Image (cartoon, rainbow, N blue to C red; front, side, top):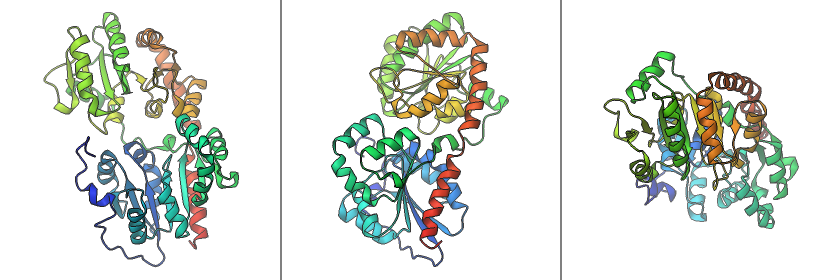
Length: 409
């Protein structure tokens, strides 16, 4: 909170204070949903809207980060009954909010396994469901070492809705009873992209952001070291396609100073502009998207994308889903461990390419930029992959409805 400096009004909420009175209504079911950050907030959008379409359901939405809170207030205020910061996971704060809210069902997204939060659900005999459940390699290694603690921890979880059989097996290893698990698929693949840019809108936005009318290479959610690789690839590309442009979108906007230093030392005459400074005055060679919540729109301006956090030493990967849903050809490095099932599906369907190291990535990015047919083939494959991957929302909602029916729904 101190580092980001944008948590206005959050401190009292994190302590569970200042909540307004909220009497329960007969015949209504109160659902508490926790999604830690902006990414999880986007993942649960379709689920939130599905729940909100039922007039008998009241939604209490909490989040942990300032970016997640801002997006929730902007996008979900009309469909959620309350939106606040998640209380610190210690007894007095968690208990205070649980006593105030008295939910009929608690839902956590992805890896939101807060011990005191789960204990409060157990104490109040409230079912708790983990949706889009997954365990990264790091989380799994940690949890397996402490499996004797996690077994008691998971007593308070009524159901784990895993994104893949691989993740379900991992949950079973750390102590979740198999009878509590259902593989429902990945909600990220059912995420609503919203209104897409038309041809004229796309051209207008490219012009407004100084990207001209040429080829655009995107670095999507990049991490340290990956901007250097992309900048070197872009220099090679400019020799082949002089009108091409580069968009760098760091995963963390706070790294803008680091990215600026790189550009100042290695751009070699290329001009750049930071999105946080407004629209540029004229064309730019490199646009840095250092703002929150705009990646999905910026992705639609790209002709080819590199998906970040996938090049060594990084191993976890950032989500390739938006590129796939939006039909943007993509490549990534070998480290996509947090998206293993999605990575495999993309590669098997010919919807993406994976390269082993920085030099191979640079060469392939340039080659793909020059190969219109290869990119069009990826787009066609992506459309088929999207069609075959949907359905997680309906399966997830079906499991939630079963639990609510057990509560007398």
